[in-house]
Image 1: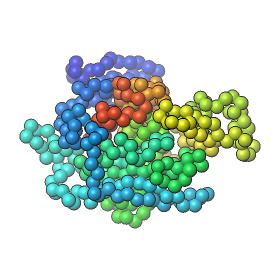
Image 2: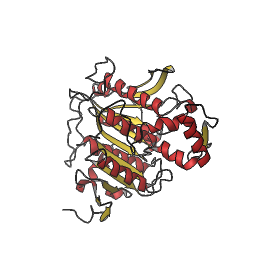
Image 3: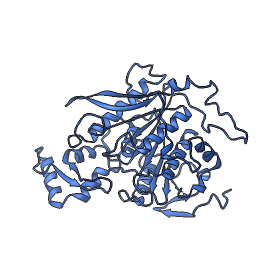
Image 4: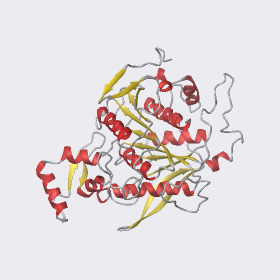
Length: 391
């Protein structure tokens, strides 16, 4: 029975579809749920207790992070059929190296004096958490560091990287597009599998959805990274058990195109595309409240995004799978000035209906912005990880 503490709101009926607003312990499976996580009081004592082990009574504290000696900094060569080989920078924390240095009983959910688990999630074999950053972001941000610390504490492998044209990776941003960043992400997933017990360092895998034993991968995507993660979940459905989206900018290239080009510019791009010719207007400059200078929205960035639109009939070049079989958690700030909360709710409805995902939840964060990088925002992210790892 739902008590007064766990009941945050009421029932909201929209598009003949019911959204329950309630405490996470009471959320029914198989529906879209909206969870209001604006108050720290909603976090369960068990989660707060384990977050204290990370150094903060309030939850996660940015200043308390530490980096393990077992974090591997390196570069991955990604072959592009048109442009040759590009180097992708990554950070990799290998839980197999870390766990060998710890007590063998680690991960077996030992209990402390008051009966709560020291580590609330029993370690699953070869669980790897991969972070996909947003547009013009890098792998060294607050959320990525928090995820690394979380994985260190629970002995899950962790992998983050910079897309081509971002951070420490090769390439120029204005020359890159969604195809490139999808290929980078596919290579990172293959790399993660090759480093797992199942891959035994032998290299990449295919996306044939084979049912043989495979590692458990959870994708955490920020902004554009959430959109890429959902596309990857279609292609690697046999590997990916969950996607956590942070300020999810699904199909963002289409929205930038609609909101930043004039009718004349859109007509020119469409005409040039139809005639397969180079446009004299190859890009428009787009402003963001999180960037000092505007960035170029190139025509090839927009065109490549059309291939991966979830709201349209997607081009299934890389997979025949049309269902999202993983759990999806979309964390979104009420004050997000880039992607309105209403759009994310619409996106969740789309994932539930068009892609037949049976476990989609939207978590509304009061006072949260697009980045969701405050201590309390990161605490919610780690709570969402506890949630999907316990399933």
